[in-house]
Length: 580
Image 1 (cartoon, rainbow, N blue to C red):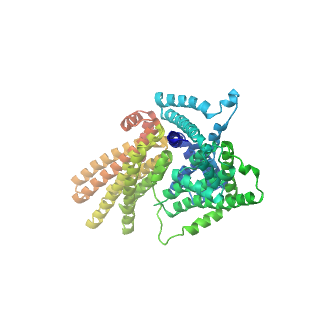
Image 2: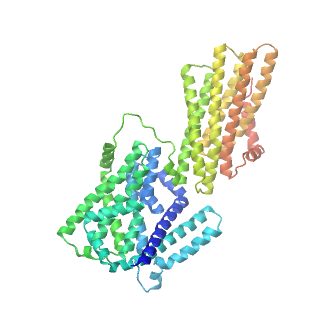
Image 3: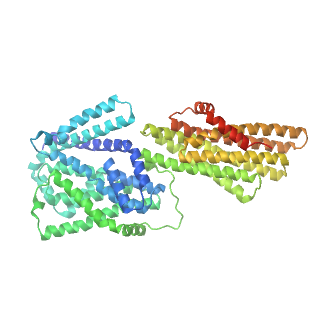
């Protein structure tokens, strides 16, 4: 092997790692909705968690990526530690798929159909299909499919380039001696762990080992311990990702490490006993690509079989290693680690926006209660809820802007746009709640009173506002466009109520039934309540727009007003909220 072979090997390795990376990213984007569905079906069942971990990792071709996602889920409260343990175990099995795909390069046959199974035969066809989809198709899904095919073709081309470049190493005595040294199981485990820690992918490091196996100098006695060590090295990514997370997330990352250390320790001990006592002949044979794939799968399956019944022990172990602290730990509301998987990050945004929406509605209802009976505790609750809305809006605004810069499907883009639009409406509802509270406090301090007629009118308006709050909140949380359609006619009734109540107030002023200062407060109340209804209309309109794939809110509302059902609902609400 000369200097130019070394350059070729480096180029092949670079293409191999690059292809694996872009293929994994495109697979994540292409399978985003399926990943979200799998997460939604996840339960506390060991089997469900195990299968989820296997399926997700088989799709994105990286147990490290899956474990990093799991750390993010636990950190965000989307997954419990016990669920995470089973998913991580499944991820270790799912990652073995890559080695089986790469082992196809070892097929050697003159039969046309069998020869077509070799990556060197079908990779050019995949590359051609990929470049057509990527360059000439407009849809994001088709482009992602093209990127997957191109990534796979690049990966396999890099693998073959690397294998061809290192073939000459088999004639070098120093290389032979190196793998003789790795037949010491401990050295083999260390070598596998270090290599995988450096490139942060057990799938990639197994691929490199398979490429080196074409030299004929890699025996099974050396390959098996290296494969064991690769499982430990892949834990580095998750451990790094857990820095700065909450206690549960750090425990989830530690589960990954402990699972692989314990599994490797047990089966390495068994391997050494078999090697020392039975001296099986196959350990001295040269490892094939297929044999390494078998060893990789067998080892990970054995680790899972060993540790699955001990998942409770594993949970207790990491709880002991990362003990509970004295301080109360807060769960991160939005985890930046999930930005690597946009569909799941969007799911997290929906959950946090739901918290914002509920805080805003609770604040507004508290403000309405303050108008009829104010006390110190209620005032604190309203202001606390309003501060929550400010906090959530700041978090979501920043996070959604970052998320929108990531590759998203058309549907996810619409959902992200909807969330960006509604968070300001919910935050403003919280602001109006504080305005109502201040009006109630002003009336108490100045001992102002409304007339009996005014109080009766106000109760009608506040009833309508409570209903529009509940309807818009329900439509948003359930993504119910049919429920959202019923919000706009009620908003128009509230607008008409406000104008009629303003006119009646002026008449009372003219008759001297109402004081000027109370009139100022009355005007402020009407304005705040009418604007709350406007924000509810905006929220409902966003839900309808998203369902109809249209981002023109005003056009949506204009069309809704022309429908017969709108007029029927309008008359129903007019009758329900008629002033005495």
